[in-house]
Image (cartoon, rainbow, N blue to C red; front, side, top):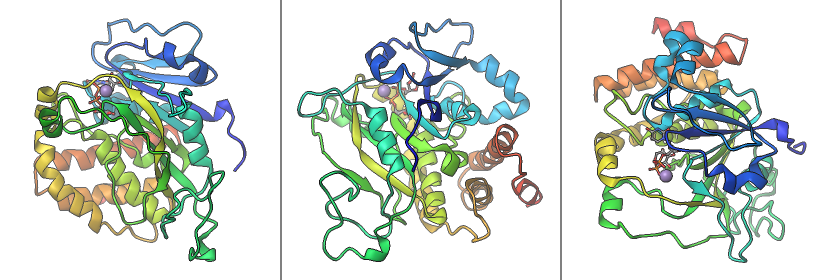
Length: 352
Ligand SMILES: O=c1ccn([C@@H]2O[C@H](COP(=O)(O)OP(=O)(O)O[C@H]3OC[C@H](O)[C@H](O)[C@H]3O)[C@@H](O)[C@H]2O)c(=O)[nH]1
Ligand SMILES: [Mn+2]
């Protein structure tokens, strides 16, 4: 793949707090364009540190730009970040939370997380056969004996999922029983998540190829007025993984690390996550059973088919999933409006 230029990347940041953390990233982020999604009170002024090239959207902007379609963008939840994915025109997205800082590798060197993500995204993935020496395209590694030569070309990588030192991304029950647990383990590896395997995608340190999988990176209707929260990235991770598996794209996890500085309130988190803790026992078998039609040849078409399946298969769990399926269609309508001129198969879903 051609080398990535600064102009090929947007950094999307959801914030309901402050952007002071950007000072810590200045040497790595200043050459790139930022898309800041200001959640919460739109009258609050969020200061962007001097010298960054950015566009900032608050709730009033989202409502003005999307009109009635704004109903598919969450309010009072980090899920609002997907508005930035929608309005971006770039090939690559990196999204990061505002309480994440530059981590150091075991040698004490600052980790340029964005550079590692872009390296992950420009090298192939190996979803069809696991390489036990991890990333075979990395300097100093290769495919091990017995690895089929017919599979060594790999497939395009659509998602790069990074990790976090210090505060781990635990669910509320785990946070409650292990309040002082910190992740101090730096694992020097990047792995492809095998085809057919789902994973808990965390959006704290996440990059993806917007052209390959952008339409499937919808973070759902969470937060204010919704029965669920903190399953925004999980939902997007399950949807994007089944879409990548169907389209023959790869998903990687591992390096880079960043430093997650603060734990969110576990009691608030428990309230947000509560229904998800048991609904996920039905959502995950649903995603594991998804078979997308071969006629679906891009992420938009796959996503509209998924929306139909969500309505049919998860709708019986709770009326929320009917709303969710409708929001998935609205998201694709908005995506088409802002991106692909070609009309997706929206009519067929609408008539379903
Ligand atoms: O109402 C809100 C709450 C938060 N944000 C922004 O979202 C980012 C994550 O917020 P926070 O660091 O408080 O949550 P964590 O529990 O650490 O994050 C995990 O869970 C929520 C997300 O899925 C996140 O990706 C996970 O890592 C941060 O930038 C907040 O400012 C918001 O916009 N609106
Ligand atoms: Mn956090």
